[in-house]
Length: 447
Image (spheres, one colour):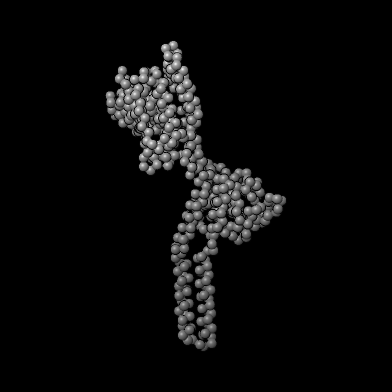
């Protein structure tokens, strides 16, 4: 990346050197004058000492400018930090204007503008009224930068027809592309009052800031793609209606139409609500209470199929957590997995769903059962994407690994690296699955 050199204020090193040289010349002239008139007294001696001090200072400034360079570096980092924060949410008119205002106060440019591929997003400075946001790109140089993706500068006056038919004269400028995945998605433009200000330092400054903006825009695009992928995975999961569950539930309802018509009607109504909710939850976060309600509906069908006394479910949701946001299909699949794989023999299966808040804005979801369980090796591999698939001969091995890995990958994608899923199980004693969701790192949090 090009070096960033803040030059908004006059070069303090050059000014200090110039003042030192002027003082040295004045003192030298006075000393020569006193020699010429033959009046070498105490004042002349003092002037000679001062002359030596000034000359030593000039030499030190030339040999050791590190303190001033350190100050420049700190100013550069501050500008870059502010600018990256400005476009954290992407490039639009509002963020572009904020970037322009930050840079204008720290550079020698008279006007700074940001464009996308078609029009001006923001323009701040002397020419702001001539190139308002939304106006089309006016200069051929900007089109060239967008087409070729390279930095361009000009030092001859450009006569540009601005908004309202006014002619604007741009003495000099530097235009750099904003690149994302190898394509120019916009430009950063510095206009100057005189061609003398267009030099290597300004060129490096504009190029460097454009590269920083490009990097942040690329990161933002990756974040958007990650969120879209996560939403698409949820929609795909919604579309994957388990055909066995569908047929079993319909057969159960059909059997009740002969033996218990009222219950069949109730089940049919719940079945309609269940799949309506399944289709309505389109990838965004939903409150915990909605996910619990969906899980209860699912258990209604399974109790009707296996018997009311075969599945005993307990829900323990901490007060105040009911409205906490969770992705759809994060609790119900765990309960379904327990019913499918932990239910054995004639003994009732006890399932407990516990949802509690944790420190640092996180929640814990725990689904436990006292069913078949699994061996340690199978349990360890359930959430390990790098290991082989779980042993299908295990009571919970067949199909359980796919469901568990799907949930694990989804919560990491939704909630970031500090979220996790794990399983603890003992063969013949039951299984407990725990999800830890870091709400602060959720991709749905507006930052």
